[in-house]
Amino acid sequence: GNSVTQMEGPVTLSEEAFLTINCTYTATGYPSLFWYVQYPGEGLQLLLKATKADDKGSNKGFEATYRKETTSFHLEKGSVQVSDSAVYFCALKDSGGSNYKLTFGKGTLLTVNP
Amino acid sequence: GAVVSQHPSRVICKSGTSVKIECRSLDFQATTMFWYRQFPKQSLMLMATSNEGSKATYEQGVEKDKFLINHASLTLSTLTVTSAHPEDSSFYICSAWGSGDSYEQYFGPGTRLTVT
Image 1 (cartoon, each protein chain N blue to C red):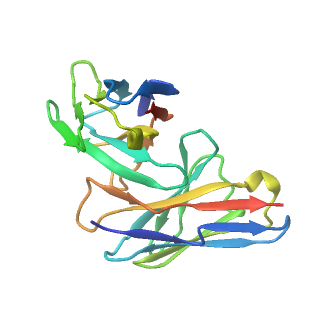
Image 2: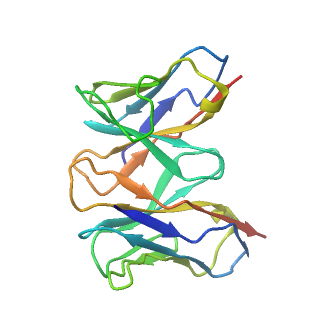
């Protein structure tokens, strides 16, 4: 079955540091890949997505590239801010089926200190 | 973008009572909605897939008689936690794929349930 493995946190960085959160996946076919962010006490928001190999998703300074050869979708940001403190989830949607379930990684808590 | 709302945002109930949580798609129709449960500092666990006009599909290990799901219209799904116990205390989140868009799943803000 499908699975997503992401770097376990917590990750603590100083403001303006470089961020990488690793994510690898196992899936049949050609899944779509997502990063979601969850701020304290809130639901999830889509941060970025990539639907095919070599696609790069980007938003708010965050980037992730769909690497089929390494089955990875690592999240990066060149300079984090305190407001980026949140939990980040990597997820995939299978290319087959009709109910479009998402499979989530366990989440990585990021804390950015001023 | 599409908006999914949940009501209530927080609820406290006594052990043995039932609680209903509503999930609405505000500006689009959703034939399929999903219900998740999230424990503190953990990932989302898919509980069930809610299908408009038909029975929900529950994930393995989820008690369908305890977590009743009704998807009576294209914009509303409800989750009822029956005979709640303290171990049912959790953060419940619903979601739906945007109408005509299979590449973004929109999440509700979540409902914090505390059973005393």
